[in-house]
Length: 317
Image (cartoon, rainbow, N blue to C red; front, side):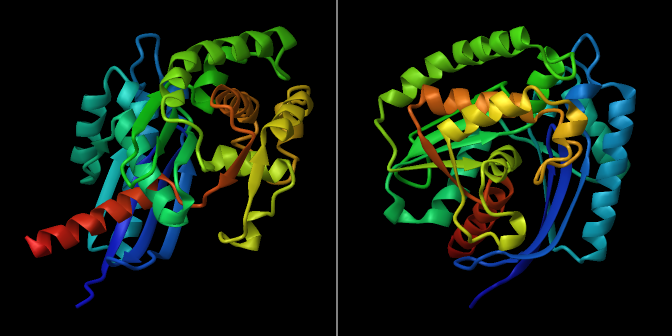
């Protein structure tokens, strides 16, 4: 007997608060019912002590309340609410979570960087299947970069590092367009942060399929010639290391306003796409990857798949 459930997944990330609602059951493809998001950029609402400011908390509460209202209207059977890098690294993250719960009823579960990487990897494995062999996945968020590799559904290695596109933009890029010296220094910083992780990944050998997930990678693929989102999720999309290097040389000389005019670049992403491209290029170079397949599934789908797996296990138990 197939038991379907309507799930709401609320993802409080560093860039957005994003709610997706799906009808899902074990062994089936989750059917999207609604997709809502609002920009937030929590990394930009940190004080000098690394705490989320009152203004940032107010914006988060409003977004969580709106998402909860939508989930109620769509008659979700269950709400899975997760928080990632911005709240994970905030000094007052625990009190913010309590504040959100008291005001909205949303119980945020903060994912560790490793868990975030593992759940994203699960979604990628389910999308490509066992025939893909060893998969190495890269995911660039607003606050952190997740990297994982493995031959099963649980990766052999999963790592997270604070190299998110919004975080690096906030911390490093203070002119528009960025100065050449800043780009060079930021590239050196990213390389240094990735060096020990690259050493760990080399122990597992090359991947048979290298994959990129996240809005940043989808944007980079679009800017280097991949099909637009309107073509559908199942259209193959790739991005290459040489393509990203050429793109960096182009967009790093542009202003934020000019980048926002490029097809595939949303207004609130135009400011951080340079930092995102630098992270993508550096990660691919560190792991000796020349081309990435772009997977439409990522963390939120991984959360859904794990929930359905657990539902089946509990019924069998």
